[in-house]
Length: 558
Image (tube, rainbow, N blue to C red; front, top):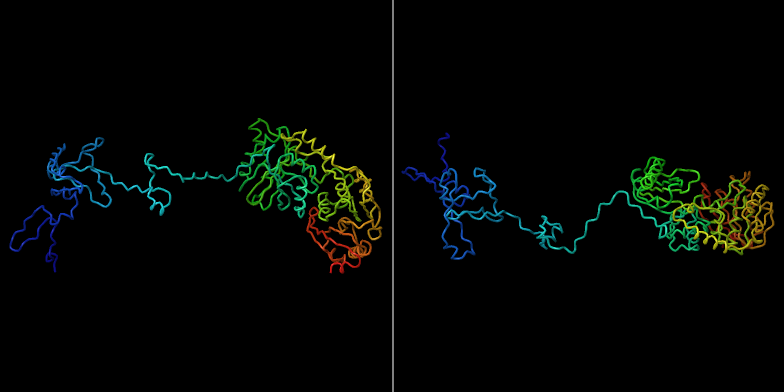
Protein backbone atom coordinates (compact mmCIF):
# COMPACT_ATOMS: atom_id res chain seq x y z
CA UNK A 1 0.00 0.00 0.00
CA UNK A 2 1.37 3.35 -0.99
CA UNK A 3 1.32 6.49 1.07
CA UNK A 4 -1.44 7.90 -1.13
CA UNK A 5 -3.74 4.99 -0.34
CA UNK A 6 -3.88 5.80 3.41
CA UNK A 7 -7.02 7.62 4.56
CA UNK A 8 -6.39 11.22 5.47
CA UNK A 9 -7.37 12.51 8.91
CA UNK A 10 -9.61 15.57 8.93
CA UNK A 11 -7.93 18.80 9.86
CA UNK A 12 -9.08 20.97 12.70
CA UNK A 13 -11.70 23.45 11.57
CA UNK A 14 -12.69 21.44 8.41
CA UNK A 15 -15.93 19.49 8.35
CA UNK A 16 -15.82 15.97 6.92
CA UNK A 17 -16.70 15.78 3.25
CA UNK A 18 -20.15 14.32 2.47
CA UNK A 19 -20.37 11.71 -0.29
CA UNK A 20 -20.93 13.29 -3.68
CA UNK A 21 -20.36 16.85 -2.47
CA UNK A 22 -17.37 19.12 -2.63
CA UNK A 23 -15.80 19.87 0.71
CA UNK A 24 -16.55 23.35 1.98
CA UNK A 25 -13.96 24.96 4.18
CA UNK A 26 -15.07 26.91 7.22
CA UNK A 27 -13.34 28.68 10.14
CA UNK A 28 -15.82 27.38 12.68
CA UNK A 29 -14.37 24.73 14.96
CA UNK A 30 -15.96 21.38 15.41
CA UNK A 31 -15.75 21.57 19.19
CA UNK A 32 -14.84 24.95 20.59
CA UNK A 33 -14.19 23.83 24.17
CA UNK A 34 -10.92 22.17 23.24
CA UNK A 35 -9.56 25.46 21.90
CA UNK A 36 -7.86 27.94 24.13
CA UNK A 37 -8.84 31.55 24.39
CA UNK A 38 -5.85 32.68 22.32
CA UNK A 39 -6.65 30.17 19.57
CA UNK A 40 -10.24 31.36 19.44
CA UNK A 41 -9.00 34.93 19.31
CA UNK A 42 -6.65 34.16 16.41
CA UNK A 43 -9.38 32.28 14.53
CA UNK A 44 -11.85 35.10 15.05
CA UNK A 45 -14.37 33.02 16.93
CA UNK A 46 -16.48 35.22 19.25
CA UNK A 47 -16.28 34.22 22.87
CA UNK A 48 -18.74 34.89 25.68
CA UNK A 49 -17.67 35.02 29.30
CA UNK A 50 -20.01 33.16 31.63
CA UNK A 51 -22.00 35.26 33.98
CA UNK A 52 -20.84 35.46 37.52
CA UNK A 53 -23.08 33.67 39.94
CA UNK A 54 -23.44 36.77 42.03
CA UNK A 55 -24.12 39.13 39.11
CA UNK A 56 -27.38 41.06 39.39
CA UNK A 57 -29.94 41.72 36.67
CA UNK A 58 -28.95 45.39 36.53
CA UNK A 59 -25.38 44.50 35.80
CA UNK A 60 -26.48 42.02 33.10
CA UNK A 61 -28.76 44.62 31.44
CA UNK A 62 -26.21 47.42 31.61
CA UNK A 63 -25.04 48.70 28.21
CA UNK A 64 -21.72 47.44 27.03
CA UNK A 65 -18.83 49.87 26.60
CA UNK A 66 -17.55 50.14 23.07
CA UNK A 67 -14.10 48.67 22.56
CA UNK A 68 -11.19 51.05 22.41
CA UNK A 69 -9.39 51.40 19.16
CA UNK A 70 -5.80 50.37 19.18
CA UNK A 71 -3.17 52.28 17.30
CA UNK A 72 -1.25 50.29 14.75
CA UNK A 73 -2.18 47.73 12.16
CA UNK A 74 -4.95 45.37 13.18
CA UNK A 75 -4.48 41.63 13.20
CA UNK A 76 -6.32 39.08 11.14
CA UNK A 77 -9.63 40.40 12.51
CA UNK A 78 -10.50 43.93 13.40
CA UNK A 79 -9.53 45.03 16.83
CA UNK A 80 -12.92 46.65 17.28
CA UNK A 81 -14.61 43.28 16.86
CA UNK A 82 -12.82 41.47 19.68
CA UNK A 83 -11.38 44.28 21.80
CA UNK A 84 -7.77 44.84 22.69
CA UNK A 85 -5.89 44.97 25.97
CA UNK A 86 -4.93 48.30 27.41
CA UNK A 87 -1.17 48.66 27.16
CA UNK A 88 0.86 49.46 30.26
CA UNK A 89 1.94 53.04 30.71
CA UNK A 90 5.59 52.08 31.05
CA UNK A 91 5.45 49.67 28.09
CA UNK A 92 5.53 50.74 24.39
CA UNK A 93 2.75 49.74 22.05
CA UNK A 94 4.95 47.42 20.03
CA UNK A 95 6.22 45.58 23.14
CA UNK A 96 5.73 41.83 23.09
CA UNK A 97 2.69 40.58 24.92
CA UNK A 98 3.20 38.66 28.11
CA UNK A 99 1.52 35.43 28.88
CA UNK A 100 -1.29 35.78 31.39
CA UNK A 101 -0.99 33.01 33.99
CA UNK A 102 -3.90 30.75 34.63
CA UNK A 103 -5.53 31.25 38.02
CA UNK A 104 -5.41 28.36 40.43
CA UNK A 105 -8.21 25.89 39.75
CA UNK A 106 -9.62 27.87 36.80
CA UNK A 107 -9.11 29.03 33.21
CA UNK A 108 -7.44 32.06 31.76
CA UNK A 109 -9.63 35.19 31.84
CA UNK A 110 -11.98 35.53 28.89
CA UNK A 111 -13.25 38.62 27.19
CA UNK A 112 -16.88 39.60 27.19
CA UNK A 113 -19.11 39.58 24.13
CA UNK A 114 -18.81 43.33 23.66
CA UNK A 115 -15.04 43.23 23.62
CA UNK A 116 -14.64 44.60 27.16
CA UNK A 117 -11.32 43.27 28.48
CA UNK A 118 -11.65 41.64 31.87
CA UNK A 119 -9.73 42.98 34.82
CA UNK A 120 -6.27 41.47 34.89
CA UNK A 121 -5.41 39.94 38.25
CA UNK A 122 -2.14 38.35 39.20
CA UNK A 123 -2.33 34.72 40.12
CA UNK A 124 -1.27 34.47 43.78
CA UNK A 125 -0.75 31.51 45.99
CA UNK A 126 -3.18 31.76 48.87
CA UNK A 127 -1.51 32.94 52.06
CA UNK A 128 -1.53 30.04 54.48
CA UNK A 129 1.16 31.37 56.76
CA UNK A 130 -1.17 31.47 59.72
CA UNK A 131 -3.32 28.47 58.90
CA UNK A 132 -3.31 26.45 62.15
CA UNK A 133 -3.78 23.13 60.38
CA UNK A 134 -1.01 23.84 57.90
CA UNK A 135 1.34 25.14 60.56
CA UNK A 136 0.73 22.03 62.58
CA UNK A 137 2.05 19.94 59.65
CA UNK A 138 4.74 22.25 58.31
CA UNK A 139 5.94 23.89 61.51
CA UNK A 140 6.02 27.51 62.56
CA UNK A 141 7.98 28.75 59.53
CA UNK A 142 5.66 30.57 57.06
CA UNK A 143 5.70 29.71 53.36
CA UNK A 144 6.37 33.34 52.50
CA UNK A 145 7.41 36.30 54.53
CA UNK A 146 4.26 38.33 55.31
CA UNK A 147 4.19 42.06 54.79
CA UNK A 148 4.47 44.24 57.90
CA UNK A 149 0.80 45.19 57.70
CA UNK A 150 -0.20 41.51 57.33
CA UNK A 151 1.96 40.19 60.12
CA UNK A 152 0.11 39.18 63.24
CA UNK A 153 1.81 39.37 66.64
CA UNK A 154 3.20 36.01 67.71
CA UNK A 155 3.49 35.82 71.49
CA UNK A 156 5.18 32.43 71.49
CA UNK A 157 8.05 33.45 69.25
CA UNK A 158 11.48 33.03 70.80
CA UNK A 159 14.60 34.84 69.64
CA UNK A 160 17.07 32.71 67.78
CA UNK A 161 20.19 32.02 69.85
CA UNK A 162 23.24 33.98 68.86
CA UNK A 163 25.99 32.14 67.11
CA UNK A 164 28.34 30.79 69.74
CA UNK A 165 32.00 31.57 69.13
CA UNK A 166 34.47 28.72 69.31
CA UNK A 167 36.29 30.24 72.29
CA UNK A 168 34.01 30.97 75.21
CA UNK A 169 34.15 34.38 76.80
CA UNK A 170 36.10 34.12 80.04
CA UNK A 171 34.28 34.88 83.27
CA UNK A 172 34.91 38.25 84.83
CA UNK A 173 37.11 38.14 87.91
CA UNK A 174 35.73 40.15 90.81
CA UNK A 175 38.39 41.17 93.34
CA UNK A 176 35.73 41.89 95.97
CA UNK A 177 32.98 39.49 94.83
CA UNK A 178 32.41 35.77 94.39
CA UNK A 179 35.26 34.07 92.55
CA UNK A 180 36.26 30.54 91.62
CA UNK A 181 39.41 28.97 93.05
CA UNK A 182 41.21 25.66 92.80
CA UNK A 183 43.59 24.21 95.39
CA UNK A 184 45.74 21.36 94.02
CA UNK A 185 47.03 18.71 96.40
CA UNK A 186 48.69 15.30 96.45
CA UNK A 187 46.61 12.63 94.76
CA UNK A 188 44.71 10.67 97.38
CA UNK A 189 44.31 13.59 99.79
CA UNK A 190 41.35 15.30 98.10
CA UNK A 191 38.79 14.32 100.75
CA UNK A 192 41.10 15.35 103.57
CA UNK A 193 41.63 18.71 101.87
CA UNK A 194 37.85 19.18 101.64
CA UNK A 195 37.60 18.61 105.39
CA UNK A 196 40.45 21.04 106.04
CA UNK A 197 38.98 23.79 103.84
CA UNK A 198 35.64 23.38 105.61
CA UNK A 199 37.40 23.99 108.92
CA UNK A 200 38.98 27.14 107.48
CA UNK A 201 35.61 28.53 106.40
CA UNK A 202 34.95 27.28 102.86
CA UNK A 203 31.28 26.35 102.41
CA UNK A 204 31.13 24.67 98.99
CA UNK A 205 34.39 22.75 98.60
CA UNK A 206 34.11 20.22 95.76
CA UNK A 207 36.77 17.52 95.33
CA UNK A 208 38.28 16.94 91.90
CA UNK A 209 41.11 14.72 90.69
CA UNK A 210 44.27 16.24 92.13
CA UNK A 211 42.66 19.05 94.12
CA UNK A 212 39.57 20.82 95.42
CA UNK A 213 37.52 23.59 93.80
CA UNK A 214 35.74 26.20 95.90
CA UNK A 215 34.18 29.66 95.65
CA UNK A 216 34.49 32.79 97.74
CA UNK A 217 36.04 36.23 97.93
CA UNK A 218 39.74 37.00 97.87
CA UNK A 219 39.94 37.26 101.65
CA UNK A 220 38.86 33.63 101.91
CA UNK A 221 41.60 32.69 99.43
CA UNK A 222 44.12 34.53 101.60
CA UNK A 223 42.99 32.53 104.63
CA UNK A 224 43.39 29.27 102.72
CA UNK A 225 46.95 30.24 101.81
CA UNK A 226 47.68 31.04 105.42
CA UNK A 227 46.08 27.99 107.07
CA UNK A 228 46.09 25.09 104.61
CA UNK A 229 48.59 22.32 105.35
CA UNK A 230 47.54 20.00 102.53
CA UNK A 231 47.09 22.34 99.54
CA UNK A 232 50.08 22.96 97.28
CA UNK A 233 48.85 26.38 96.12
CA UNK A 234 45.65 28.41 95.57
CA UNK A 235 44.73 29.29 91.98
CA UNK A 236 42.30 32.06 91.01
CA UNK A 237 40.34 31.22 87.85
CA UNK A 238 40.14 34.22 85.50
CA UNK A 239 39.26 32.58 82.16
CA UNK A 240 38.15 29.34 80.56
CA UNK A 241 36.72 28.02 77.29
CA UNK A 242 37.11 25.64 74.39
CA UNK A 243 40.08 25.57 72.07
CA UNK A 244 41.43 23.77 69.03
CA UNK A 245 44.57 25.69 68.27
CA UNK A 246 47.00 28.16 69.78
CA UNK A 247 45.06 31.03 68.21
CA UNK A 248 42.00 30.08 70.26
CA UNK A 249 44.13 30.30 73.40
CA UNK A 250 45.39 33.74 72.35
CA UNK A 251 41.86 35.03 71.77
CA UNK A 252 40.65 33.65 75.09
CA UNK A 253 43.56 35.13 77.04
CA UNK A 254 43.19 38.49 75.30
CA UNK A 255 39.64 38.81 76.66
CA UNK A 256 40.84 38.74 80.29
CA UNK A 257 41.20 42.18 81.86
CA UNK A 258 44.80 41.68 82.95
CA UNK A 259 45.47 45.39 83.67
CA UNK A 260 42.72 45.20 86.28
CA UNK A 261 44.53 42.35 88.08
CA UNK A 262 48.08 43.67 88.42
CA UNK A 263 50.22 46.62 87.39
CA UNK A 264 52.29 46.67 84.23
CA UNK A 265 55.44 47.00 86.35
CA UNK A 266 54.92 43.49 87.78
CA UNK A 267 56.79 40.60 86.23
CA UNK A 268 54.92 37.60 84.87
CA UNK A 269 55.60 33.94 84.10
CA UNK A 270 53.29 31.37 82.49
CA UNK A 271 53.30 27.74 83.59
CA UNK A 272 51.45 25.37 81.24
CA UNK A 273 50.10 22.00 82.36
CA UNK A 274 48.54 19.71 79.76
CA UNK A 275 46.41 16.59 80.11
CA UNK A 276 45.70 14.88 76.76
CA UNK A 277 46.09 18.18 74.94
CA UNK A 278 45.99 17.92 71.10
CA UNK A 279 48.57 20.70 70.74
CA UNK A 280 51.95 19.67 69.45
CA UNK A 281 53.96 22.13 71.56
CA UNK A 282 53.02 23.36 75.02
CA UNK A 283 55.88 25.85 74.82
CA UNK A 284 54.22 27.53 71.85
CA UNK A 285 50.93 27.67 73.79
CA UNK A 286 52.80 29.33 76.65
CA UNK A 287 54.21 31.89 74.21
CA UNK A 288 50.73 32.70 72.85
CA UNK A 289 49.40 33.34 76.36
CA UNK A 290 52.34 35.62 77.09
CA UNK A 291 51.71 37.53 73.84
CA UNK A 292 48.02 37.95 74.67
CA UNK A 293 48.79 39.37 78.13
CA UNK A 294 51.42 41.76 76.78
CA UNK A 295 49.21 42.90 73.90
CA UNK A 296 46.34 43.60 76.28
CA UNK A 297 48.60 45.72 78.49
CA UNK A 298 50.04 47.53 75.47
CA UNK A 299 46.54 48.37 74.23
CA UNK A 300 45.45 49.79 77.59
CA UNK A 301 48.61 51.31 79.02
CA UNK A 302 50.98 51.55 76.09
CA UNK A 303 53.55 49.36 77.87
CA UNK A 304 54.01 45.65 78.49
CA UNK A 305 55.08 43.65 81.56
CA UNK A 306 58.41 41.87 81.73
CA UNK A 307 58.92 38.13 82.11
CA UNK A 308 60.70 36.58 85.09
CA UNK A 309 60.62 32.79 85.12
CA UNK A 310 62.38 32.45 88.50
CA UNK A 311 60.51 34.75 90.86
CA UNK A 312 57.55 36.31 89.01
CA UNK A 313 55.32 38.84 90.76
CA UNK A 314 52.18 37.60 89.01
CA UNK A 315 52.50 33.92 88.03
CA UNK A 316 49.89 32.65 85.56
CA UNK A 317 48.91 29.00 85.12
CA UNK A 318 47.43 27.57 81.91
CA UNK A 319 45.69 24.20 82.32
CA UNK A 320 44.79 22.28 79.15
CA UNK A 321 42.60 19.23 78.66
CA UNK A 322 41.64 17.58 75.39
CA UNK A 323 39.02 20.29 74.60
CA UNK A 324 39.08 23.02 77.24
CA UNK A 325 41.53 25.51 78.65
CA UNK A 326 41.55 27.28 82.02
CA UNK A 327 43.55 30.35 82.98
CA UNK A 328 44.53 30.90 86.60
CA UNK A 329 46.37 33.58 88.50
CA UNK A 330 48.55 31.90 91.13
CA UNK A 331 47.82 33.56 94.48
CA UNK A 332 50.53 31.59 96.29
CA UNK A 333 53.79 32.01 94.43
CA UNK A 334 56.20 29.60 96.07
CA UNK A 335 54.41 26.30 96.83
CA UNK A 336 52.71 26.10 100.22
CA UNK A 337 54.85 23.16 101.27
CA UNK A 338 57.80 25.56 101.54
CA UNK A 339 57.03 26.75 105.02
CA UNK A 340 60.48 28.19 105.59
CA UNK A 341 61.51 25.66 108.28
CA UNK A 342 63.73 23.27 106.32
CA UNK A 343 67.22 24.65 106.73
CA UNK A 344 69.07 21.33 106.72
CA UNK A 345 68.02 18.98 103.92
CA UNK A 346 67.81 15.24 104.42
CA UNK A 347 68.08 12.31 102.05
CA UNK A 348 64.72 11.65 100.30
CA UNK A 349 62.66 13.86 102.63
CA UNK A 350 58.89 13.79 102.84
CA UNK A 351 56.95 16.65 101.30
CA UNK A 352 55.37 18.86 104.00
CA UNK A 353 51.93 18.64 102.37
CA UNK A 354 52.17 14.86 102.22
CA UNK A 355 53.42 14.64 105.82
CA UNK A 356 50.45 16.69 107.04
CA UNK A 357 48.13 14.51 104.96
CA UNK A 358 49.56 11.33 106.50
CA UNK A 359 48.85 12.69 109.97
CA UNK A 360 45.26 13.63 109.04
CA UNK A 361 44.65 10.24 107.42
CA UNK A 362 45.83 8.49 110.57
CA UNK A 363 43.19 10.23 112.65
CA UNK A 364 45.73 11.51 115.15
CA UNK A 365 44.56 14.36 117.35
CA UNK A 366 46.53 16.69 119.65
CA UNK A 367 46.71 15.13 123.10
CA UNK A 368 47.72 11.68 121.81
CA UNK A 369 51.41 10.58 121.89
CA UNK A 370 53.11 10.71 118.49
CA UNK A 371 56.23 8.78 117.49
CA UNK A 372 58.38 8.63 114.32
CA UNK A 373 61.13 5.97 114.79
CA UNK A 374 62.77 6.76 111.40
CA UNK A 375 62.34 10.54 111.37
CA UNK A 376 64.92 11.61 108.78
CA UNK A 377 64.78 15.42 108.63
CA UNK A 378 61.90 15.57 111.12
CA UNK A 379 59.13 16.66 108.70
CA UNK A 380 56.45 14.55 110.39
CA UNK A 381 57.50 15.80 113.82
CA UNK A 382 57.31 19.47 112.76
CA UNK A 383 53.85 19.06 111.21
CA UNK A 384 52.52 17.23 114.27
CA UNK A 385 53.89 19.90 116.62
CA UNK A 386 52.38 22.72 114.54
CA UNK A 387 49.00 21.01 114.59
CA UNK A 388 49.25 20.58 118.37
CA UNK A 389 50.04 24.28 118.87
CA UNK A 390 47.43 25.36 116.26
CA UNK A 391 50.05 27.38 114.42
CA UNK A 392 49.23 28.54 110.88
CA UNK A 393 51.86 27.16 108.50
CA UNK A 394 52.00 30.36 106.40
CA UNK A 395 52.81 32.89 109.11
CA UNK A 396 56.51 33.11 108.21
CA UNK A 397 56.27 33.62 104.48
CA UNK A 398 54.94 35.94 101.79
CA UNK A 399 52.47 35.22 99.00
CA UNK A 400 51.97 36.32 95.41
CA UNK A 401 48.55 37.87 96.10
CA UNK A 402 50.31 40.63 98.07
CA UNK A 403 51.43 42.11 94.71
CA UNK A 404 48.03 42.17 93.00
CA UNK A 405 45.80 45.21 92.56
CA UNK A 406 43.04 43.90 94.78
CA UNK A 407 45.31 43.39 97.75
CA UNK A 408 44.22 45.15 100.96
CA UNK A 409 47.13 45.26 103.36
CA UNK A 410 44.99 46.30 106.34
CA UNK A 411 42.70 43.30 105.91
CA UNK A 412 45.67 40.99 105.48
CA UNK A 413 47.33 42.24 108.66
CA UNK A 414 44.10 41.68 110.53
CA UNK A 415 43.92 38.10 109.26
CA UNK A 416 47.51 37.46 110.27
CA UNK A 417 46.97 38.84 113.77
CA UNK A 418 43.93 36.63 114.24
CA UNK A 419 46.04 33.58 113.31
CA UNK A 420 48.83 34.60 115.66
CA UNK A 421 46.35 35.03 118.51
CA UNK A 422 45.02 31.49 118.02
CA UNK A 423 48.46 29.84 118.31
CA UNK A 424 49.55 28.27 121.63
CA UNK A 425 52.86 28.91 123.32
CA UNK A 426 55.54 26.26 122.73
CA UNK A 427 55.90 23.64 125.47
CA UNK A 428 57.14 20.08 125.91
CA UNK A 429 54.80 17.75 124.04
CA UNK A 430 54.52 13.92 123.90
CA UNK A 431 56.00 13.94 120.41
CA UNK A 432 59.04 11.68 119.93
CA UNK A 433 61.52 11.09 117.13
CA UNK A 434 64.44 8.72 116.60
CA UNK A 435 66.85 7.74 113.82
CA UNK A 436 69.85 5.46 113.58
CA UNK A 437 71.79 7.98 111.47
CA UNK A 438 73.36 10.80 113.55
CA UNK A 439 73.29 13.13 110.55
CA UNK A 440 69.53 12.81 110.40
CA UNK A 441 69.24 13.55 114.11
CA UNK A 442 71.25 16.72 113.62
CA UNK A 443 69.21 17.76 110.56
CA UNK A 444 65.95 17.23 112.44
CA UNK A 445 67.20 19.30 115.37
CA UNK A 446 68.18 22.21 113.12
CA UNK A 447 64.85 22.19 111.33
CA UNK A 448 62.91 22.07 114.59
CA UNK A 449 64.96 24.95 115.92
CA UNK A 450 64.23 27.03 112.80
CA UNK A 451 60.53 26.39 113.32
CA UNK A 452 60.73 27.31 117.01
CA UNK A 453 59.67 23.82 118.07
CA UNK A 454 62.88 22.28 119.41
CA UNK A 455 61.67 22.30 123.00
CA UNK A 456 58.38 20.66 121.99
CA UNK A 457 59.85 17.44 120.53
CA UNK A 458 62.14 14.81 122.08
CA UNK A 459 64.81 13.43 119.78
CA UNK A 460 67.00 10.32 120.20
CA UNK A 461 69.70 8.61 118.16
CA UNK A 462 68.67 4.94 118.18
CA UNK A 463 67.63 2.05 116.00
CA UNK A 464 63.93 1.32 115.74
CA UNK A 465 64.56 -2.31 116.58
CA UNK A 466 66.28 -1.31 119.85
CA UNK A 467 64.80 2.03 120.91
CA UNK A 468 62.71 2.18 124.06
CA UNK A 469 59.00 2.47 123.48
CA UNK A 470 57.67 5.97 124.31
CA UNK A 471 54.86 6.26 126.83
CA UNK A 472 51.64 5.45 125.13
CA UNK A 473 49.62 4.02 123.60
CA UNK A 474 49.62 6.46 120.72
CA UNK A 475 50.11 6.78 116.97
CA UNK A 476 53.28 5.71 115.18
CA UNK A 477 53.85 7.14 111.67
CA UNK A 478 57.07 6.63 109.74
CA UNK A 479 58.65 6.52 106.31
CA UNK A 480 60.92 3.43 106.48
CA UNK A 481 63.95 3.09 104.17
CA UNK A 482 63.26 1.20 100.95
CA UNK A 483 66.48 1.54 99.04
CA UNK A 484 66.11 5.25 98.27
CA UNK A 485 66.82 7.13 101.50
CA UNK A 486 69.18 4.49 102.93
CA UNK A 487 70.95 1.53 101.44
CA UNK A 488 69.92 -1.71 103.18
CA UNK A 489 71.42 -5.03 102.15
CA UNK A 490 68.77 -7.26 103.57
CA UNK A 491 65.43 -5.41 103.40
CA UNK A 492 63.47 -8.58 104.17
CA UNK A 493 65.26 -9.00 107.51
CA UNK A 494 64.61 -5.37 108.42
CA UNK A 495 60.88 -5.61 107.64
CA UNK A 496 60.55 -8.84 109.60
CA UNK A 497 62.28 -7.26 112.60
CA UNK A 498 59.91 -4.27 112.46
CA UNK A 499 56.91 -6.60 112.56
CA UNK A 500 58.30 -8.48 115.56
CA UNK A 501 59.00 -5.25 117.47
CA UNK A 502 55.51 -3.93 116.85
CA UNK A 503 53.89 -7.11 118.13
CA UNK A 504 56.10 -7.28 121.23
CA UNK A 505 56.46 -3.66 122.36
CA UNK A 506 53.66 -1.57 120.84
CA UNK A 507 50.51 -3.21 122.05
CA UNK A 508 47.60 -0.75 121.82
CA UNK A 509 49.39 1.50 119.33
CA UNK A 510 48.26 2.23 115.77
CA UNK A 511 51.17 2.06 113.34
CA UNK A 512 51.23 3.68 109.88
CA UNK A 513 53.96 3.21 107.26
CA UNK A 514 54.28 4.78 103.83
CA UNK A 515 56.54 2.99 101.38
CA UNK A 516 57.06 2.46 97.67
CA UNK A 517 58.50 -1.03 98.18
CA UNK A 518 55.99 -3.68 97.12
CA UNK A 519 57.75 -6.27 99.29
CA UNK A 520 57.09 -4.33 102.48
CA UNK A 521 53.61 -5.71 103.21
CA UNK A 522 54.76 -9.29 102.82
CA UNK A 523 58.04 -8.76 104.65
CA UNK A 524 56.59 -7.14 107.79
CA UNK A 525 54.45 -10.21 108.44
CA UNK A 526 51.36 -8.27 109.58
CA UNK A 527 47.91 -7.95 108.10
CA UNK A 528 47.18 -4.34 107.15
CA UNK A 529 43.77 -3.10 108.14
CA UNK A 530 43.88 -0.24 105.60
CA UNK A 531 45.79 0.60 102.42
CA UNK A 532 45.79 4.01 100.76
CA UNK A 533 47.42 4.86 97.44
CA UNK A 534 49.47 8.07 97.59
CA UNK A 535 52.33 9.75 95.76
CA UNK A 536 55.58 10.95 97.32
CA UNK A 537 56.73 13.15 94.48
CA UNK A 538 57.05 10.89 91.42
CA UNK A 539 56.99 7.70 93.52
CA UNK A 540 53.77 5.74 93.80
CA UNK A 541 53.42 4.61 97.42
CA UNK A 542 51.09 2.71 99.71
CA UNK A 543 50.09 3.91 103.14
CA UNK A 544 49.53 0.89 105.44
CA UNK A 545 47.70 0.88 108.76
CA UNK A 546 48.38 -1.73 111.48
CA UNK A 547 46.39 -1.80 114.69
CA UNK A 548 48.43 -3.50 117.42
CA UNK A 549 46.88 -5.30 120.41
CA UNK A 550 48.12 -7.77 123.01
CA UNK A 551 49.03 -11.05 121.33
CA UNK A 552 49.47 -11.55 117.62
CA UNK A 553 47.93 -9.22 115.08
CA UNK A 554 46.32 -12.19 113.37
CA UNK A 555 44.29 -13.01 116.46
CA UNK A 556 43.17 -9.36 116.64
CA UNK A 557 42.12 -9.44 113.02
CA UNK A 558 39.79 -12.38 113.75
